[in-house]
Length: 345
Ligand SMILES: Cc1cc2nc3c(=O)[nH]c(=O)nc-3n(C[C@H](O)[C@H](O)[C@H](O)COP(=O)(O)OP(=O)(O)OC[C@H]3O[C@@H](n4cnc5c(N)ncnc54)[C@H](O)[C@@H]3O)c2cc1C
Image 1 (tube, rainbow, N blue to C red):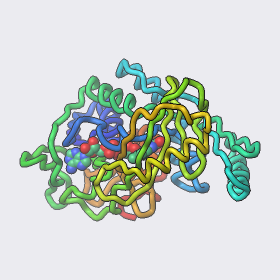
Image 2 (cartoon, protein in one colour):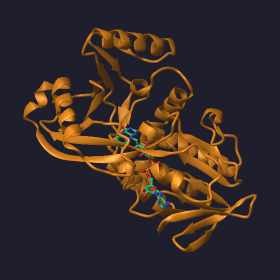
Image 3 (spheres, helix red, strand yellow):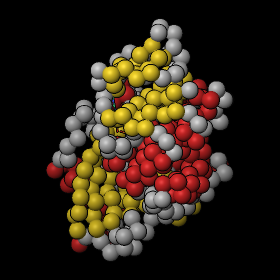
Image 4 (tube, helix red, strand yellow):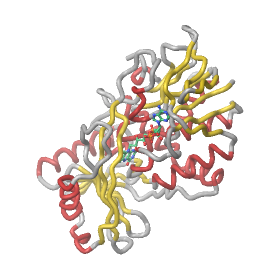
């Protein structure tokens, strides 16, 4: 079976790697370098417990993917020969006033009731099982693993899904038709721009800006959530400060207004960062749907599988997404109930 994966972000590369491990012929199509978009820009928090607003299918999916992360990171490092910066630093959610404290105490209650570790000691909720990874390293490793396993990269725009009316038959890449029996749509924020798709929930770009500060290693020890955003410390002293959620179309711009907000947030959450150096800033486009759930599963066009719309959690969800897609291509039942994420919803 020949498979084409449209989009070589973290999702597309992970899918390609898993499909190659099952022996399928895999062509990744990307208009740019692998993992050059959202998967490069992300902070790398693997944090279902801090991200969830409550129990539900996305929370369950996220927990399942988090469980896979330690073994996924180890296997990926082995296959690629590269580090992915996976760290079990845990997450602290910090309350800055009484209302936030009450909300965090309630979060601790429902998460403990769900059997998870969540330790509330005012003013912070400690989530020891939420982890982090370094997305630029992850992207490079995923592409290396996919390539080493035999996936081929075609550089160009996937313009149109080709079909015979009932089944997918390939993809038009620039003006070149490529044949395939299975096509996986993993084009991130650009997914809805491909022609010839069956009806799918719309995926749109939601911009996020990030600031990187560099101080002494250990100034910030765990991921910190608070003030509407987060800090993500790397082992070498870099601390990412994120992020914004902006409807800005496909414009990847960094703005003084958001940078100023990120600087204030850094100092509120960790005043000891006041003399850190500003070392970098950037933005990326999250693939976001109206209901903020991923679009995952077989579509109305036989042979076309959607793996997109991962919004704020595509890095966290890459391992489980890749396994689900590989199972669908093989005609096996996926390990997760996909109805809530159905492309036909
Ligand atoms: C600021 C920011 C912080 C984030 N932090 C986190 C985090 O901490 N944890 C987390 O889990 N997630 C985080 N995310 C979300 C995460 O980055 C995304 O959900 C994830 O990267 C999506 O991966 P993807 O492979 O679907 O998309 P992308 O990485 O965007 O890849 C899509 C690829 O498809 C290609 N493409 C698109 N259309 C076409 C076409 N027609 N033809 C050819 N190629 C095409 C693009 O060039 C691109 O390479 C963050 C996102 C942002 C912006």
